[in-house]
Length: 167
Image (cartoon, rainbow, N blue to C red):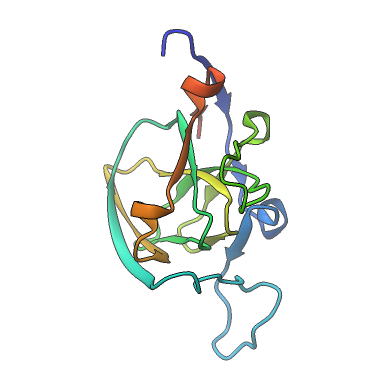
């Protein structure tokens, strides 16, 4: 990484408006509320849906690579209410297999622990990142997402940049 330019990114507040081009910020609502514009539109029909809790260990808040899933909308939520961060770039055409993200379009968001994030199909993402030693996340994707639908671009190798998240 000696030739990699490190760019500091200050996380933006997660709002429905700020996240609209990347996905849906899922916020608490009253039970029984009908489906509406604040709800995530899930695409889970290209495989077997999988909901699981993943335990992640703290790692440096440095975005060196960014990933997308072209077959599914992925949903993430911290299970114990801890704040977390995620780097995002627009999906572009999720059906274009050799697509690359635009490094200049990468933004980092601060997600409150009482909210979930449903990413649009194909949205480029890096994270979750967090400051605790470990953090558990609910993850909704497809059963084989990590084996057959995990498209990663190394920003440091491909573009010579990495992004330091500065909370």
